[in-house]
Image 1 (tube, rainbow, N blue to C red):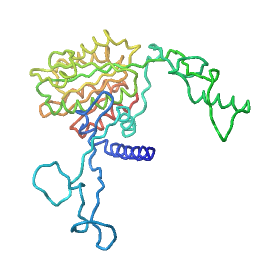
Image 2: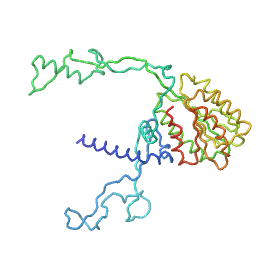
Image 3: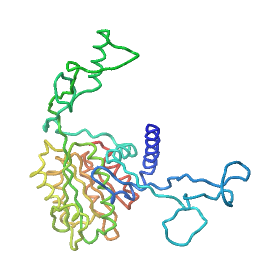
Image 4: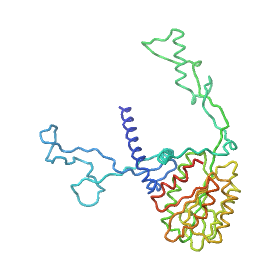
Length: 369
């Protein structure tokens, strides 16, 4: 009975995850689960899970019941259940939401399948190593916590059969001290592939809360994929208007300034971060910049110089996402066209609205760098 219940539960989870996978594009563009993010799991509201319920059948069709009822009328608690507010009604509800927990690794696999993302080939992976214990061998001595029960009983069984002491009609196997086998480990040096992710965002007055929400959703999915590809992720945040500074995640998404825009100030901070904390020979470096495309005209030359000499050569990817704003000029992406033509690790994306997040993520991560 317990095994049947486990099988039914496993099948139900497969059905729910299949529904999540089929509706992943909707989740990508609207970000329902971001507010439900845990350390290892994401809680996703899945709509339209059918809840079985009894209904009245045709009279005389068999069965036992009490009271009057019409054909098709639900019996007991079922799809007519509501939230307990308002007057009683006789119409079925439109659907149900069920919170389903999905691991971040599962979500990353779904994302990779949906967007057909290639696996990332990290650079510098031979320069950083870590010692790891792998239980790959068997010993005849060890603590009880590492005793390998299956192999111990197999050894005892072979001993009994070899000595002709085994009785198939009374299969009693009592391992002796000489039968005990224990799992053992080997310590090896394994490459540790770490990544540094630096997010840059214009927080001048022309970037509204709607644009910041787009950035927040896209960054969530970028993080989900990169964390699936690397052993460790270091994330930094840089905001700027005419002046740039490094901030924490909450400040990154909730700061709004006024005044002018000087993108070179942000590039200088990014360059300092790379030089100070992330040796390009050891780290896989990703820079994701989001802006509405406004910049002080005389600053563009400085931007291109810092970008091409100090940032792009050290990055796996430099991605620029231009979020459309009713107040931004949208000109800066044109300045970056020449840089993209000269460097294949530069990706540009125009994000008109939330619906464009899907294609933007695919553009950014589709190179497999």
